[in-house]
Picture: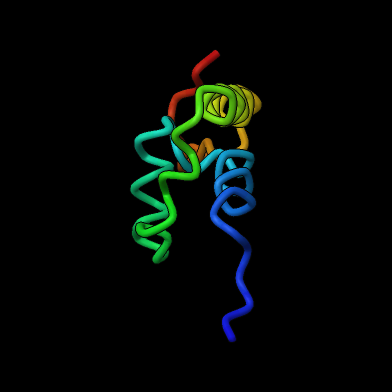
Length: 76
């Protein structure tokens, strides 16, 4: 028996991580992880809205923003 989170739980983990910029990217990530056959669980308006908000918050909080290389100009 495989010990991995369900598709909804994993979707929330990815959304909070900041590694995706949209729900489309989130779905692509889930498909790549083998959740393709259960992805329809994310089709509801409520869950889509929640995931979109989490993605936006994670991105604006800088969770997934890479550090600039040494010597790169600052974005200030």
